[in-house]
Length: 361
Length: 239
Image 1 (cartoon, rainbow over the protein chains, first blue to last red):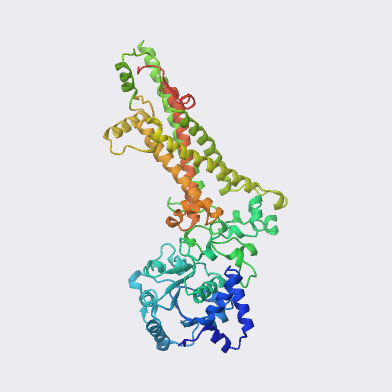
Image 2 (cartoon, each protein chain N blue to C red):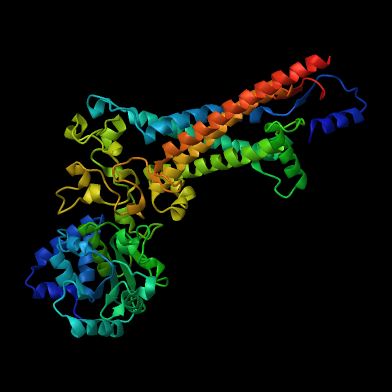
């Protein structure tokens, strides 16, 4: 169990120099988009504040959020896990197991009532009283609600916890439900993505632990600093979009030249995330840079929004798979035919009525 | 108000009923709005279609081309014009004559409205003779409201919401129309509905033009020229 020592104490105990510590503060402040003054404030906070206990729980998920998290470069996840936070419970990567592990939950809940952060990867299935996800002998939904009661705030990692993701895709047999539909009385920070970018995850954790408050959230509960712009807005292929230069086929001239992937179904124009600025694997690349369109993995219901390779979304409400243009053109065709038929009947009626009138007079 | 009542009212003032009579129906702001709308909607539909399904790629360097940029600019500009004129038109609904208000509501609780609505439906299915109306008949008022006024508002609202994505989260567009994203968190859905809205309006335009031409020929009262002069000319009394 974490002692009441400051982050700075831990950092120094691990043999990290003061110089490295200030460098880390500057780098983190810069990656969060703050000015140079923030680095000093951050250093002071780390020197004086107690480490915040973090509980990391796993519901229905694939652990890709964890996989992403442990690859963070700025700040290094080593710094986050070992020094910045006190990651007291994470059943996937912790050393303890069984009753020993579960005891930590109870201890944290009692000792740090209202002070710990609950981070949730995955979501609870509600069907059959939650029996589709049993964790420590109990339905996950019960464990989640129980730990959420005394948490300071909750972080929803990834598309699963934020929106529902693949297990909530239609027809959603287990009734997998995003956590903000289950926990209604706590502030929830959504960090969507499948998985979210490592630096975004550690950035959010760093912000909360250093400033002791939640980052500013947008309408959907996502941190504004990472989710206020679309992939499209900062995409390095954007000039090709504005010019009207597209990849039409996967092996054409446009694909080789790195033209815009709009026509091959890139969801960049409707996806809010930091991929085009922060990128992945320590800033090496991101999907569009690798020649594939964005699939919109940080957006609500992205599995149910048609093919990853169509620009226009298919609608399922009409019995057949058709996009807005097909539906619209069919409707216009039917109405056009009806108009032609109606005009023909009108003309016919007019001619026959005139003839009758002519006969009468 | 049917033409008979209007004419009867005129007779009550001691005027002699004449064969030809014209009534001022569409005031200048309504007519200007109509034609600005026609041009904007045509522009918006065309550019909007090419935003959803872009033209074939242009050759050359990206720096030398701005095709998609221009198409989007025209779309946004036409949308702004449409929105400004819609605001002016709403203002005119309050200060203009009774016909300026017609398309903004349906007298849902009026039994007479639905009776005449049914009659009008019978006229269009060749089952009844047509009564004459000074402004819109009940069926056209109903269709205009459902397939034009409501979709137009929908398009303006979703349009500005989508525009706010590029304009930025701190712009006035997002402040005013950002609530759309509370209804549909994924803007991909809003794109799709905005696209469907275009087809609803285009189908309306088809019916609108057909009915206007047909009435102009069939009903012996002016329709098309009324939207230019404002005067509705009744060529003769009901024969």
